[in-house]
Length: 327
Image (cartoon, rainbow, N blue to C red; front, side, top):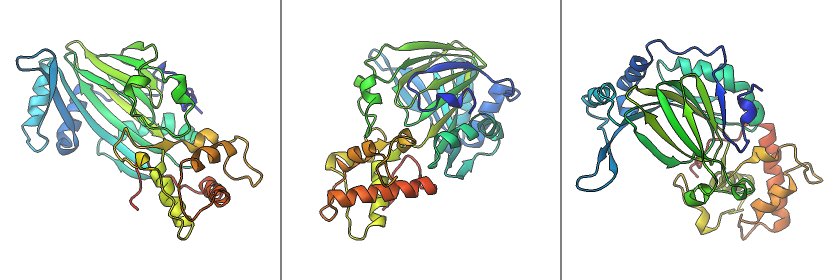
């Protein structure tokens, strides 16, 4: 694996310089604005404005259906207003997906820098989402965390990224969600002042906020990659393996919004000691069977079912992405 992908599934942020074989698109800001203009309906564009008669600011979103929105956004960039835009360039999972027109730069970077290491680290299948980010005027993207490990390739302008490393108690969780923002921000934050030509690795689940500094447009492309496995997807796959099994989750675990979804990460357990049948590692069986429910599957059968699922997962790509399958 490359030095970049050596970071995958590690808990601490890390800063890199661009590898020598990465070259930037020419005319960077016009390239970014042209990408937004060509994909206006899919783009998210916003401006942070003062609250009327109140302290602080609020976000106003540009109308994606109005062709004039791209000119408002362009003028905001030119006048160094606190505008911000994001656009998905690549959505790819288990060998299928979408690469936007003119996103060949991002696709080449993925193939040369990440593809081999990602496949090695996540052999059950994985997903990739690459996004373009363009902002300026001290725009602040509020603290949040992401489902998968991320690399922010900073290409132009200046950004400050504050990262709260994942506290140890969250690193030890086998089954997790990302709903506890306050708890995830209990660690001491680290500030990174990004300059063009730098890459910041942000671990999965690490809270972070991003501020675009100065009048010059800040342009970056992020690559988020991994295989967080939804517990709801596991239930759906187990129920297809056992007739009348009716495997389910407790009510508190069936929410489907992004931060309340429950996941586990199978690849954390690859290579760890397994049971006598060479199936799923005992530690993972214990945690999963502790929450999986069924009136028709006893504990012994559940162990066999999970080990059969594990062998299937190790022999073919069954990962279908970070959001639950439709049952």
